[in-house]
Image 1 (cartoon, rainbow, N blue to C red):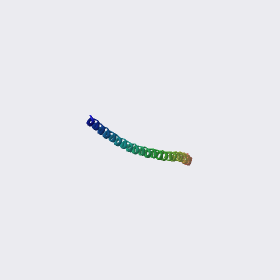
Image 2: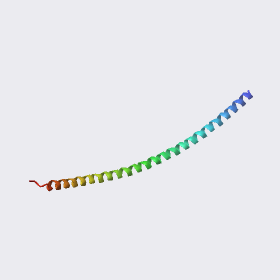
Image 3: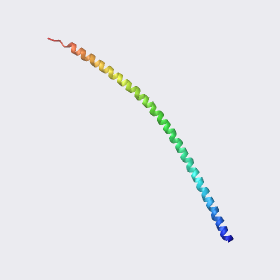
Length: 90
């Protein structure tokens, strides 16, 4: 009976050690995962800032293009009016 209890005790000690090692490995994985999440969150924040900057720049470029198109149409009308008026009618 003592031998059975001794073997049972050894098994339980081994099981406790095994579970402690398992917990340590899980803690390491948890730390790594937390670090990866923090890195990803930082990148998301950086990308959102960059996207906002490009969005703002894009809006400005669209306004510039609209203005340039308006100026181009006005010049084209002016050229067309001058061309129409330059023909001599007989």
